[in-house]
Amino acid sequence: PAPSFRHGAVVLVTLREPREKYWGAVLEVTTAGVALSGINLNAFDDFTSQLRDGESVSPGVVFFPMHRVERIALDEPSGYIPSLAERFSSKVGMTLQDYLASQVPRD
Image (tube, rainbow, N blue to C red; front, side, top):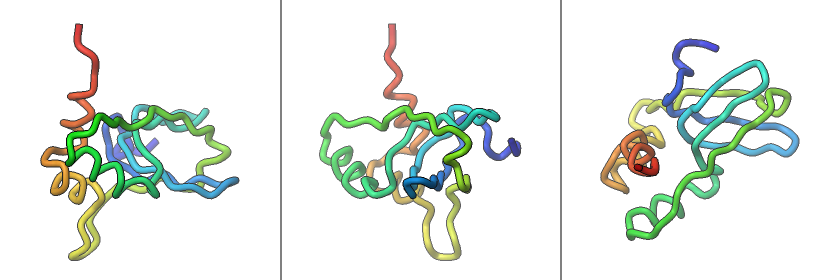
C-alpha cells in the first residue's frame, strides 16, 4: 500500500457488490483486504449528531476483502469544501484520531 494509507489515515473506502462507502481510520491494508475503524458514510450526520449530544455511540471495526474494494481515497478537503474529518472535528469538538483513542478500553 501507498505510505499515505498507513495505520490511522482517515479515508473513504468505496466498495462494490453491493455498492457502499465507508469513512474512518485505517487499521490495516493488506493483500487480503482493508480493516477500518469507521462507519457507513450514510450514517455520518447521525453519528456526529449523537456524539455531539453526548450519546454513547462508537464506530465499528470492519474488514473488507480486497475483491470488494473499488477505491480507497484519503479524506482531504477540496477547495472550500472541508474534509469529513474537518466536519467531524467542528461538530464533535475533537479530531477523529483523538476520539478513537478515547474509545480504547484502559486497564
